[in-house]
Length: 265
Image 1: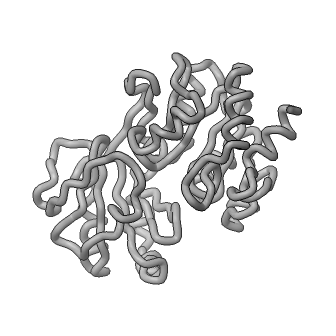
Image 2 (image 1 turned 60 degrees about the vertical axis):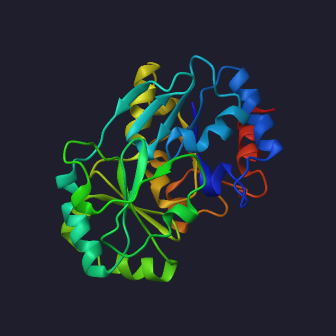
């Protein structure tokens, strides 16, 4: 199985999959290798990439919401799913309110920009098909499951918010800086690794059968668990240190470079 992060990894800086990466991944997919996109976004937001790579066969799945939902591509059925209740988001809401920061809360269908806080930049940053439904925190349903929450702001402001996170909040959430302007708050044990384990189990495989490509903090889990963790040249330094291999950057077909080398073709 080959697991691929999108932004900064498979996607170029203009958020596209190059023809070279497309051709190489299609070739190994046709040879029977499982090619799995791993993203913080819902499947509808990346459907164009799934279609471009031809990942619509019976055995094709996607890891979405940073591991919280594993989806069967061709019928959108859920293989594994795990979310947080509203009560679990209270400490985070209190924190961002004190920081005068924005917050977007996501369930498994849509995004709720919180109207009782600073306006968020997340909708402008988000590329893909998902509804944004503004609500106050009080208006969020108690019974629903939420996949994650996102603080999206200017990178220098995000640096400040991050510096002010205390140890209790770090225990309450798995916090990852997925992009300079985006910090994600997941359930404490949630990670792309969770979704990948469910998918590997489904195919009677384990992490010894996994090659993972990534560049950022939210890829660390799968990079360290995979038999071969491949980090992009443009990746964050701690991720490079944790990986097994550093390949070319995302604008120079770094994914294709290593896949060709490993699979000899």
